Length: 289
Length: 289
DNA sequence: CATAATTCATCACCATCCCCTATCAATAAA
DNA sequence: TTTATTGATAGGGGATGGTGATGAATTATG
Image (cartoon, rainbow over all chains, first blue to last red; front, side):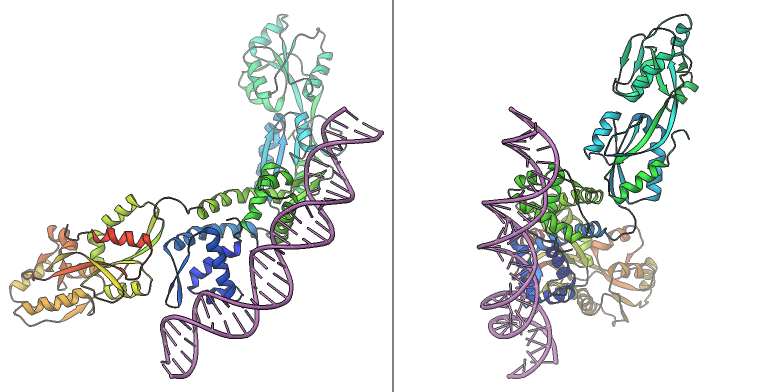
């Protein structure tokens, strides 16, 4: 069945349109015996007769007509798909990996720009932690990543896309308790993440001894946890602005000096022009916009 | 481009799913060089690279991924279409030709029965005059026709499906004028149609000399014309019952004795089982039901 | 670090397929 | 009858697709 080629279907469709094998042969720039042979092959492949003799003509059988009308839209779609070649502009599916913070800060803007300027390009987006993102990139599971922290890995080409400020936040009740000397637990991303490292550095700035540290691999969940009064977290301003304004979160300690850097990255040996163009555009993003 | 065979697409899809050429080869019960060759052929046909080396693996390019995701639904549809073979029951497109009167009397019922009992069968319906219908049938433009008048043509197999009564109808105003001796024109289908012949026969029954005869090739329009007071027509009861009840039409002269016969017909040498089954079912129809 | 295993490319060889030209048989039109 | 049209058939040449054996590059394993 799989030995059917596209020209078999094309031949069937042209015979159906023009009525005779000879006309289809002319239309397809080939000889009439070729058309006969193609029909014979197609019939052999699908296992039932498509034509029936009627005088000197060949008429489609009932099932043959069914096949024609089934194949007509399919053929059109196939032609469109396979001919989508010389089309101007970039086309293709690019897999983007990004961390939660970058996703919240500039991904919608990036996606919108791509949709607008490169309509042929489709983005597949996956959210992960920095370490996973790098692994995906090197393992060619992703084409382009937006990730936190300075990355200096051989085989990776990066461009900084800005930094966001961090703040010690908690529920308003937690802030009040802290003001009275309480020592709430600190929540953070897993140990290997850049934000966790920044959090440890920021703890050094503080006079009090470091309290218990708990981790969660999801920033949104982290926010929910501290908003529920379960502790304090060092969170990016970009993701908490709204909750802060709404009073669901409050500043617990003074903000540290450190900011968290973000970068766009692709494989160093990347050669695909679409990916390179997307990297160029990603490099122009500004987290602190 | 048309030299692409279905197995080329199938191969691409399995490589995309399984990740390696070797795995695809095993899945497709073939050797690995075959897979390499198929990919090479496919790339040559579409004109751009689908894969890129990465270590010892082959990775889809951006455009390659695009093609995969474009082809996935197409492939599924093609498989479904081409494999629609051993499916139980009849399948296919049958072209039905019918006259207006038969269409109005029993076509909806017939179509509903086919939809219900033979869901794989699609009907293409065309409305024409009897002469055209016969020509279509013999010329294999139609597979089955429902037509008026006794047909005895060699090469055609018929079955009676009943008869309908005819009445001389006109607008109520016309009927009133006739009662006072007026001689309105008579409207009818074209000369070669069975209804026209019946009309002429019915005129013989009448005492008065035949008035002017005008023709129109469409019964519905004919009804509209006489309902607008433009004359009298011999019309089938089946199509005028409603207008008569609503008072838009009225009986002008006494009804003639003749009724108009209807038949289902197929080519005598028809062998397609689907058409034969539909003919069997059509033979059971009753116009006078 | 050396070895083994995996992955895809290449090669030679063979079978099959596809297309062409030339011709024929059947039917329809003149 | 003659002519034209339609599709089938036959034979040969060239392209295509398939296989198994082998090789190069990379990655896993001891």
